[in-house]
Amino acid sequence: MTESDAASQRADFLERLDVALRHVPHGLATEIRSGIAEELEGLDAATVSERIRQLGDPDLIAREAQSEIRRPGVIAAERKVPLSHRRGYAIAAALVFAFGGFVVPVVGWIVGAVMVADGKLWRRWEKIVAIVLPFAVGILITVVSWIVALISSRESEGQEHNPLVPSPGGLGLWHAGILLALILIPAIGGWLLWRLRRR
Image (cartoon, rainbow, N blue to C red; front, side, top):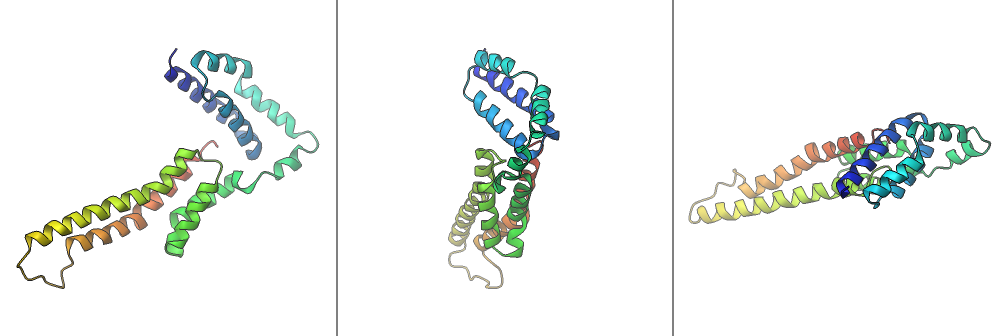
C-alpha cells in the first residue's frame, strides 16, 4: 500500500466520523475528531488500517460520546470549551473577514483575519490560504499595473498626456482595490464558511 492509500483511508474514516458525530455537542465532537485525526496522521497505510480497525465503527464512537455527555460534570465541561473552538465563533470570524472591511475599511478586515487565524475549526492550510491569498493577488495586480504603466509611458514618450484620462497603471491599482474589496475577500469568507460544514 502507498502513502496515497493511507491518505485515502484516513480521509474516508474521518468523513464517516464527521457524519456520525453530527448530533454530538460541537465542542466534544471537535475534540474527538481532532484527537483521532492527529492519531492517524503520519502513519503508513498498513498501520492506518490496523488503527482504524481498533477504533471501530464511527457510529459506535458517536454513541459512546453521547453516553459520556450524560455523566455528571461532562455538560459543565462542555460549556468550558474555549471560544475559538466554537462553531459560532468560526462563523462570526468568517463573516467579519468577508464584510468587516466594508464597515471599517482595512481595520475590519484585519480584525477578521486575526479571528480566522485564532479559530480552531479550520486547518492550518485553510487559514494560510484565506489570509495570504488577498495579499498575493493584490501584489500581483499591482506589479502588473506598474509594468503596464511603464510600457505605456515609454510608448507615449514625447506625446502630450491628457490629465483627464487616468494612466493604465493607475487604473490597475484601482482595479486591484475593487477586486479585493468587492469580490475576492467576501468570496474567501464564503469559502471559509463552506469549509466549516460537518465540523
